[in-house]
Length: 487
Ligand code: NAP
Picture (tube, rainbow, N blue to C red):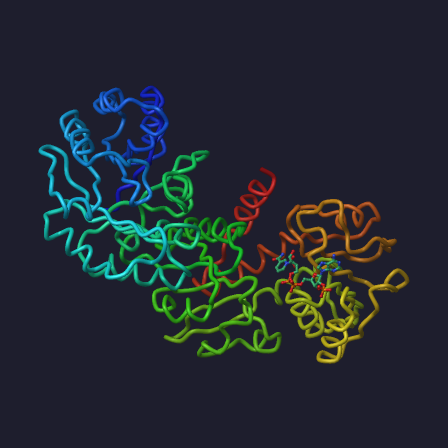
């Protein structure tokens, strides 16, 4: 079973005790005392070692050497003397790098020995041989931490855990985060997580809340089905939050994680085999169509794909944005879109989905885009009417749809600095902030409004339906987003 380790470091023993209590309350199994960092900040080795028996959790004691990104650059004999003292005073584990152990073997008498290897510059090479070397000198645990260059490198780490007996293996940085969030599913012996508000001891450590709460590490196992979202950037994505709520709501053995991906095709080729379903966001919505066994008709028509699911052994690509846009448009006009006049602002990926969705629902579509040529091209392709961005003020419509990024994280900006007719419906796809200036002004003008969050939840529920055949708990997902966005 995967054990959760909270790394702690501080020169003050009192602080270490407090932190160990917080780690236990957060659900951790172990703390790691980063003695090298404690000493670098002025702590006394003997004072810190004396706290070991009083800690609230068993401790890994680590005096990491500068050669593997630690802060200890002293003499190896001094390091072994400190380790020996920590062993005597009740350390549960001692962590020493393989390279030092190979040059000068040493074993604790009471504690167990972790032999570790870190590559902060790349995904590591010959990792299986490294782990075998650790085992051959009787390490009680082999630990490997590497820095992936792209998410495709996660495949190698997963294979290492899968095929080489108990090993603690993790990828660092934001690209490596899935290896930590999936530690239970992959079977890593340890996973390091930071307390909320702490910096952690290596880049990319998740919080205990994300690991134990959102990703339900304790329920993960070899049969856990793995889902995720690919994009770049991805850290802001609310998809892991809401899809994990949905999996937990139905008690499904499944987990959903964010993949920071540069090369989408390379990622899918390396990792697609063990992923049951994917959400796809910017800039990868055009990257994987050719790799699917089948595309849903709307996905094919729009030419953008935001969902992968599996059906009868094959992979299927879908565009759940387009359906969500149609439903949001219907809500904004309070009925059928047939014969209604919709003005779409924006001819990027979302604008394109909107034009196809609204037209296939029977609306007359007008399209405007800041860069006129993009609007002209899309209008020509779809048979809708392009309206110049500079002469929008007099345009009449039943439905205004904002598919530009204007207003995104900019509550003072609006793509529509003009009068709004009270009879119109207004749908703004931007959901951060929850209420954009466009929505505020539309409400004040008496328009029916639909929020970008409605589209986000709707497209996610449609993904969940394709993955599981079940209805997602839309209200709980929506409330979680509101809490996160209002924090
Ligand atoms: P995109 O392909 O990058 O397109 C961005 C669009 O915004 C383009 O039409 C661009 O016009 C326009 N734009 C950017 N800055 C502008 C400005 N200052 N003034 C006027 N127009 C401007 O992005 P996308 O995938 O279409 O996404 C667009 C927005 O849709 C996102 O920011 C997001 O808020 C929203 N969205 C929401 C959901 C949801 O679930 N609620 C889903 C997808 C997207 P140019 O062509 O002139 O650059």
